[in-house]
Figure 1 (cartoon, one colour):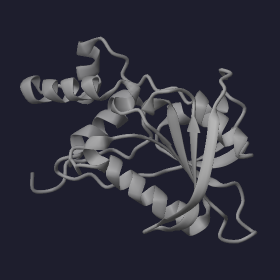
Figure 2 (cartoon, helix red, strand yellow):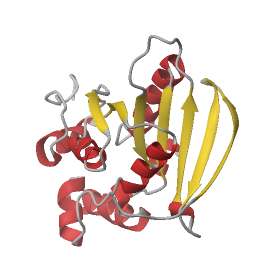
Figure 3 (spheres, one colour):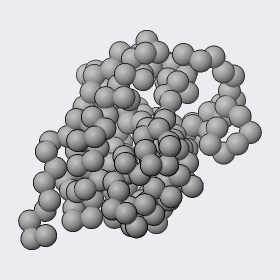
Length: 206
């Protein structure tokens, strides 16, 4: 795991989901150098390893509510689960699977003009399909005293990335039902990116 210094601030946090603590870890001067974390105490003392969701930004879905992916729904489901049971939601400010907004929108444009899925569009642009690095997430979790967890994810790379830092990970699936707009995106993640999803079927009636 890379060694970096960071600044840390926290405050009480009240949201539509409930009460918790909001942490920010700042690794540098740029906005994308921040990692956010919501911490929720366990619902009872019998709960085992904390439930954790690691999510990277998807501004098109999370802010502007685009319909071509499941990112908003995954974040919503994760927040509901963590506030119900206790745990952490760690949020990386890196859109486009870490490739940035410009690359993301260029890839979406190739989907419009040439019918490329997100995997093949990034290949066409000469960009790694998923360049995210989870070392800063691991540093945040280590700082909060978390060395083993139950990770809400379908992405084996997230599991591998955290386990490489010495964190013990048990995976908990987080599958969102496909919609007429999102099914192709989900099927691309399953078929070309190794995500552990059930076979994604086009919704009936299309």
